[in-house]
Structures are given as C-alpha cells and as structure tokens.
Length: 321
Ligand code: SF4
Image (cartoon, rainbow, N blue to C red; front, side):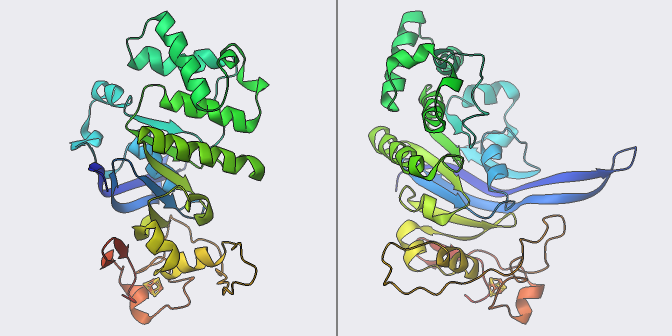
C-alpha cells in the first residue's frame, strides 16, 4: 500500500428539510452520518451502496463541492474543510472528478478541445501551442484522436463522451480522481471498455481513484479496497480479495449474493433484501440495517455497532463480531 493521501474523520452531512412560508427547518436528511476512512496513494478505493446511501454526497464533499456539516477531510495532511476558497481553488488541481452522466457534464457549446483546455488554463502555465499539444496527447491517451479536438460533444457516443470527461479530469495531472458511477449511464457493452481504460490509466500513471458505484460487480476488478455504505455509514471495509471471498456484514453478503457468477455450476445462495432502504430522515435505531437483516438480535435495535477490526485489513460494524 502507498502512503496515505486522504484521511476522512467522522464526516457528516445533514441536509435541512424546510417547511412553511418562512422556510423553518423541520428535520434533517442524514445523508452522511459519521464516515471515517483512508485513501492511499496509487490505490482504487471503491465506495459501494444502494441509491441514497450517501456515497455521491461523500464524493462531492471530498472535492468540497458540498460543505460537510461536521468532520475532517485531510488531504496530504491538511484539512480541506477548513481551507479558504482561494486555498481550495489551488487544491482543485490535485482532486478532479469524473461524473456519472457524460451527456450532462460536457458543455454543448464548447469544442472538445475547449473543454479539455479549461483545466489546463486554470491550473497550468502552458502556452497556446503547448496546450494544443497536451490536448492532442490527452485525447490519444483516452483512446480518441487528436483531430476530435475540433468537434462538439454531441457528435460523440456516450462511451466517447465519457472518454472526453476522463481526458478533462486527467488534464491537470491530479493526485486523486473521484469517479462517481462513471459507467452506469453507459450501455453494458461499452462499460467494460471504459472500465479497462480507467484501469490502464491507473496502472500507467499510478493514479489514485475513489470509485463510487451502486453495484459490487462494477468495482470488483478495478478496486484495491472497498467500503460498503448503508444509510450514510460504512458498514464494512476490506481489501478486495477479502471482501469478495469472505464478506462479513449481512448487508455485504446480501449485495454479493446478487452478483452473477460466470460459472453456472457454482452454487450460490441468493439473499433477498426485504423492503426498501429506510428513509435517511428517520433512520432505524441501533444498527440502521436491522429492519432488513435476517440475523437481527435484540441488541441490534438498541445499540449502534461501530467499525471493528476483524482481520489485517478488514473492519466491520456488526454486533455478530
Ligand atoms: Fe444485522 Fe445486527 Fe449485524 Fe446489524 S448489527 S447487521 S442487525 S446482525
């Protein structure tokens, strides 16, 4: 494992729900409710959970696109939550994002060259010619061609647009890339091509990713470690091999049981998750998974389990351990 790049400590985000003409705060959505984890240089950290678990809010807080309500995000030892706007503007060079929707995230009025030039203008001192050369290199790097620079985003397919989004994210040579469901809006046939590209780029340039996904199968090949989120909290965190071969939290087991396996003879018990994810406005007491857990005990309804180390790189928040 490389050196620690990011340390997140007790991160919380509450979104107020306002009511009435005066907009009085009535309650809060607990989108992220006390997350702590680390990200190491050169790794891909997968963050996985069902829709509404707080994973995208977490990704946006790492970039300070959303201000946390509480907690610390130390990037190379400095807490970005406390940084001024000016300090954060400089830091953005080091932390870039690849968005879920390649259709909405590229400005339709700009050519591809102009889109990729933006971060180069803001974060580098490259002159016009050097910039054009770099744009050409970046397009080739993501499997497009230099001549694509003069075209507009709408002339490209979804997969190609996501490649443009990746080129833009790489332009300023960031230290950390947050990829928020980067393949979920793409056709299944294109998903693996974009995943392979991200994997190849990671290896070639020793990139560090936070890869956000709703499905454990998507992050299986690319991730080095995986954190599983449920209702704003991490319930299990482990290196990839441990998580996929020996999942411990009942929620992780249920998610993994739904992942199809290549060998039709391999027997696997499918665990059906009953009911929907409860509302993050009023999450269940104790272990927030207890309303859907088939191992639920009395203590689970009363006491919130904390993350406990159960192996060298394996932590789980469950009263069974
Ligand atoms: Fe299930 Fe209890 Fe573990 Fe929560 S703490 S996952 S309810 S066994």
